[in-house]
Image (cartoon, rainbow, N blue to C red; front, top):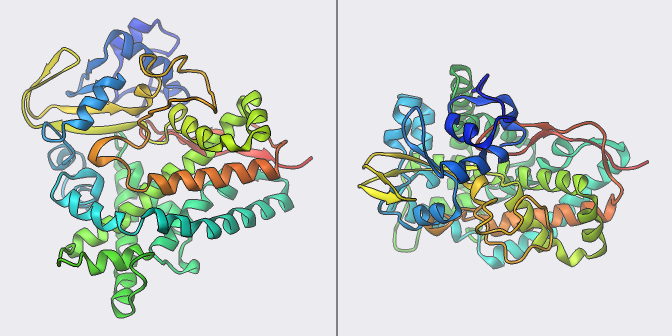
Length: 414
């Protein structure tokens, strides 16, 4: 929810004192980092007006990630008042990311089996062909949108391939993902909830048909995640029908917007820091550390959530059971205690133990694939269009949880 709350031009202590995740000023969405710095300095365990706490220090996030017994990922209590008896509630309390073991363990093991290093390496030739095709199309156009014409097109194809969705049926996937994930913002309007529920219904109806086809004609479980989820583990471990459906939706959502943001954020940051762009063009072997720096500097996913299951102390503050805890990944990744000169974009930064993919048992199962997509997309883009320019200011997505751009108009040729 956008608000007329105190401007980010306010002094740091005032920013920390007045911070309310449910009433964020409009300019926060463009640049939340002054607020994050203020909170880390003056209120690192910030009690929110609506209840719960907001954590901004790297060490505190690590502690929460490690203590899975005390900091639960189960969202049933938190999401019930937010979503009621709706499809969104069913989805976001069934998918992998918002659950504790044993459900989390079962689903993650099945998904990870199709995302082995060998399987991901096997995707590289197809990824290169996809990226080069998109680059050819952009060269023909000259004036492009780096999100619509490039960044968003890559993960949709990759996830479509993982689930073996027919190419001519992939067009709605991005809009469905954006609508479903939009309902995870700190404040959800009735219109956004309606849009999310409608998208989820359409996606689930589509998956019903796809699953029926796959039951009749299974794919290769080493590459087709849907077939793997259907067949389950050799020991007989299988997902229920609801678990299967919702974790297919989760796969699209987890792999789509965050990777779109990684690529888009990277290309914008390189345009904004021409010295770093020039260095990466001159030293293309730095692409791996460059991707890690994009993930740290502009974390695609800025917020995570936990619920305390017992009394616990963190950052010198005692939290009772049932406390909602927001983990601010974006703030932790700019913590000067962990990252020297944290507001500097440095493509060769090392070490760089960022939390863009989380940590512990909930660390992103697809992080190796996301890194590969980002590295191939950005390195081949720079090799093809080293002199690209942004033609007008990029348009942010207007979200607090997911940080990225909706539109990045650019010129890729003179």
